Image (cartoon, rainbow, N blue to C red):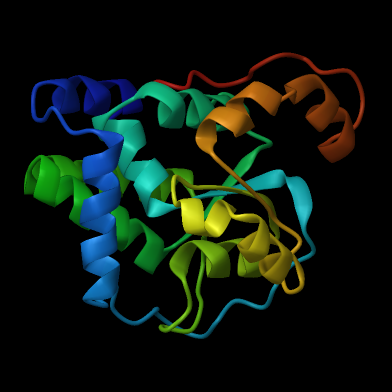
Length: 199
């Protein structure tokens, strides 16, 4: 199913808020229900600005809420050279939130589309799924609604291990400059979006 089809289904399935998404994800992670990562851990790749990780709260809010999460991820979806990186546990967290706040069929449909759209990475089971995805996948941008990850102290500690900027989706959408990014990632003049973010 297309992103647009999933968004249409979600509109009639729930009236979820970002706060409800955050609470659902927090409960899941406190219960440690992410499960083990499959296979060997991916060797970290060099960070580049064209690689992005969205935490499970942003992934679920993109589907269920829209707003800042969708604005941010639309920029990613509209450009084939911007890579969304996500591990299986990260997708599993978002799928579980969607299933809790909407329904299991919508969650399964979202998981199938998201799995096709992401570049997979694997990490040890006890790692934070979003941080580990950024580290293993060389993502220089991590989008999250989690204020703890976006705090100055957390940012300083994380940057000691991962070359990743952690942003609220609204901040990422406001700063996303595809022309400059294209020159840095691909080189040359920016040709404009090359994908429909609703497909």
